[in-house]
Image 1 (cartoon, rainbow over the protein chains, first blue to last red):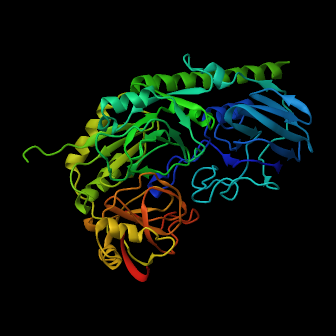
Image 2 (image 1 turned 45 degrees about the horizontal axis):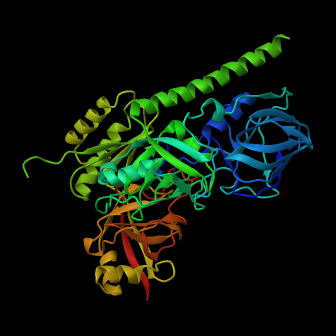
Image 3 (image 1 turned 135 degrees about the vertical axis):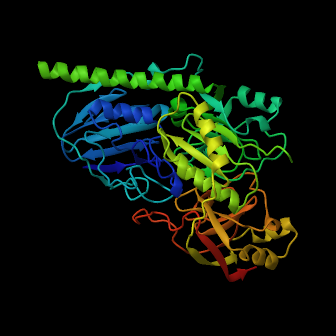
Length: 325
Length: 220
């Protein structure tokens, strides 16, 4: 078990998400940075869909009540276990009574604490992810609080420390400036409702991520991008990554806790391979959109899969080497 | 018109695709959407076929390498889809119009150049059909609203609107199942449980069910 000693923002239990309940109005939820969640679970030899703690603000402190392996991935953080510093994207081992202290976050927006065997909250509608709007999943369908006890499925077998290269380095975009996140998007249904000037403005602007950005959506600020004439759509399904353009011309990127349907015009959609980059973009930071063809978006997903495949293969090698010794 | 409008098909990134049927926002078109949804949900690589308002979202198990075959199948499926008449349940929902939660009642009346009593009477008159579920757990989109009380969605969506809000967005109406962000205008509220994840079917209402609003009270 893990006891929460200190929590600052809305930390929550998330797995990869709840993907087949749209017809009941239930969105995906799930880790905002699914690459980091997978990497943490791979490090621990867990099922990649095992639930972890998503931590959006520091400080965050927990106490382990048993010997257990854990991993920290996602945002770059200053963290210590029993007073020893933990490098980024690292698997460590806690002894019963040890305190994990994540003090600060220097890059990125969300850190993931995965434990051996995963956080063992009940599956609800096929997932352990917290559904805030529906108040179910995760731990009682709500953000974590001080004093919460998280059950762990874990084996207590001791495993050695080990690190991997963060996805942000391996999958870095060549043209990204410091403090600006560039994400690839595919144009969406109402792109042509905007004239060439408005479209240019959408591509050329460096959008500011406003403080009203969270797991529901990222509300951006910049020059108003308005369609040629007002668009009122009949409500239709939307997915995380869809960029809606409300009448005020300020884009909203739908994120993991987004509504499952909407009617504002959609100018584009962030591709699956880049959605985690949005999840790691900080409030007050900048975002820029880059147009991508569907085939290139699939190639980008292949590149991400290849990165995860290498992680899996390397982990297997490491474990085999250890067993042979 | 000699050439009928064709459906619109657009991508939602790499994880889903949207099919929008041509024609009116009515039960006849919606019944064809239900049929197409039932058909498409059995196709390979399709995770879910999710009806919207005269449209259908397909989410992908894995993104198809080629989209042409899927697009053709959708177009053919639409052309041959017979309306699926779902014999649903009929629900009566008592509504308090106006008040703190239904605070947009007056502005909706002003926008439509109607009195509050007119808006309430017009809103409560039809037998609505549940066209689709969406937005948030258990929320129902209702078809059948009188176009006289059409109001465009908000310029900027609200961060939080109350659970049980009865609201209007464009030419649609619906009742929220829980509190959350909304771009619609709340004109009243109801206390009813629309969703419980422990139920065998987690949502209380399903497409094809019908809803009648009963005027419990009007707060001016």
